Image 1 (cartoon, rainbow, N blue to C red):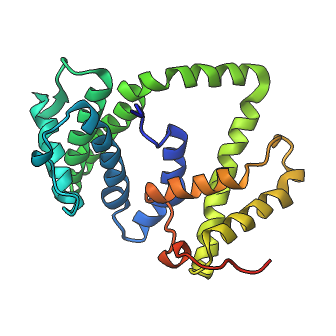
Image 2 (image 1 turned 120 degrees about the horizontal axis):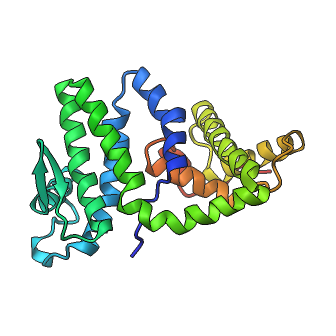
Amino acid sequence: MKNSFDVSPDDLIGYIRFSYIESIRSGNSAIQENLLVYLESRAITLMKEFFPQWPEHLPHKSDSFEVVRQFWLNEAMHNSDEYAGVLVASGHLDPMAQSCVNVMTLCSSVREAIVSGKSEMISALSMLLISELIGGGVWRKMEKAYLAQNKRFEKGAGDQIKITGQIKIAILKKANEIWKEKSDTRIGDVVDELYGFIQDRKAGIEELRYVPTKGTIRTWLKNASKAGALQIPAQAQRAGRRAAA
């Protein structure tokens, strides 16, 4: 079982700055339609391990996400207690299970607050949600990686880690531009162009010691797409011959 959410704090910061805020300014509901759905999907995946169900009780594979979400939200609510009008996971649960339950109930509460137009409640609940993702059970599973990263910073790798995060955002922006200009460009061709984009600029980035591989770039694109921070056109994902070199 993978006891963590796919989205890291750095990724979340990048997605919000790169995609969600711009989308909201354009009149879209990026938080409600993308981020919350993504976090709920990850929580549901983990909850299936913590709260096994009889197969006949589970939603059918053909059911909509809303049906699946409501099923697992109900499970989360059954494993929660209420404090000051906010549901909190029961103390008998494993820390990671508590985080999953809290993510499910908080996402639901944020969604309701958005629909109701309660801006201050949205802010408060969103801060709770982010705190749960970073400071709750999920963070406990990330502690080893966090400590290892701190050691890398102490040894002088901090600049490299920082510049890699900046490159990731630059790559996502460039990919978005490529697909806006030509939506049927295959993912492989986009990855090649992005790899060349970084190679052409690496000489001017003193802190950049390692250029991300094409496999890494493809993973960044896929993860951003899963989180709703990058729209990969359907045409770009179809099987077919790539453009000639």
